[in-house]
Image (cartoon, rainbow, N blue to C red):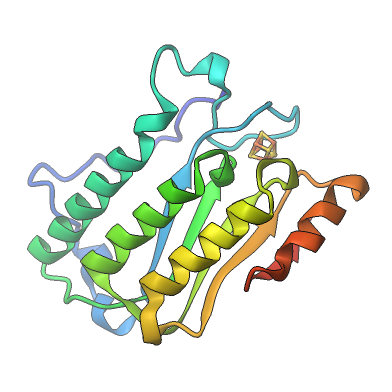
Length: 188
Ligand code: SF4
């Protein structure tokens, strides 16, 4: 289980972003990170904010996508209310945790919500981390198809996968399954 949160600035009372965050925002690159805090097992060296099924204390992994989608709409509203002009996302990154523990349809739905709220810039890069034991070729095809739909003509490089917690024997199935229109990068 993740450790205590670091001490940071208190949340602004009005719920808006502080001036230090909005200054020059329109001229900066805009990317969206979606944290999916679930893992099948907890690796001993890991300090990411992530939870195994036994650590969820009755909360539902199946409800996560809908909650994240609501959070996307909320974030879009906060940015607008804070005076940050709308910008299309140049990158969308699903990290964790192990995002591919969720059904591919959930990842595609979350990407759709981001696309609806912000749009995707031409050439936008959409990436998900994955453990090789949590995806198969059908999953990757669903991700690639969903990303292609979401990107429409604006996105020329749909869904990359970035696999972690990899061992030699587990990389091979992921390598074979990269044929579904996905670019693939494996890091250990
Ligand atoms: S799979 Fe990755 S995110 Fe999950 S516990 Fe292991 S190192 Fe951490």
